[in-house]
Image 1 (cartoon, rainbow, N blue to C red):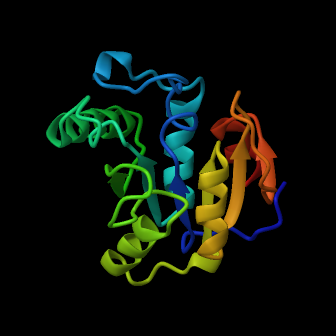
Image 2 (tube, rainbow, N blue to C red; image 1 turned 90 degrees about the vertical axis):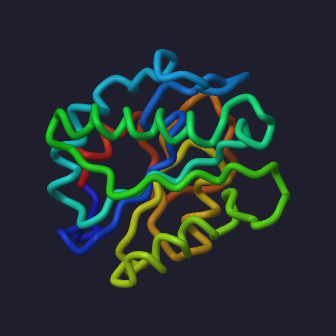
Length: 178
C-alpha cells in the first residue's frame, strides 16, 4: 500500500500511450481500430474514478504536426476512448494533447508543464501536491516532478532513467496500491 493518503481531493494525470492503451513503439495510433486498452485498464477506471476528483490524460501527439492525422481525427479517438471508459462507470475529466513538433512553441509537450498549467487554469482547485502523474517515459516523470506531483512509472519496453516515487507493471497494480 502507498502511504500517500489519497482521497477525493486528489487529481490523477495519466499519459495515454503505454499507460491506458498499448503503445505502438515505432508509430502512432491513427485510427481507433488501432487503439487497444492495456489489460485491466478499463476494469480499473471505475475504482480510480471514485478515488480521484479529477482524472486528466496528458499526451504528446506529434503525429498531428507530422500531418499523419488531423486534430479532429485525434479528438475523435479521444472521444471514443472516453465513451468506452464511461461504459464501465469510469471518467476522464479532460484530455490534453500536445500536438506540436518536439521543441516547438507553445511548449505544451511533456516534459514542459504546459498541459499541467492548462489543467490548473481550467480547474483552479487542483493542488499539485495532491496529484499523481502516471507515465512510462522520462518525459512523463519529469513533467510530474516539475509540478510537484507524486510520480508513478508503468514499466514498458521504454528505457527510463528518471527515478519515480513508485514503480508498477500496470494501472491495475497502482489501483490496488492506492
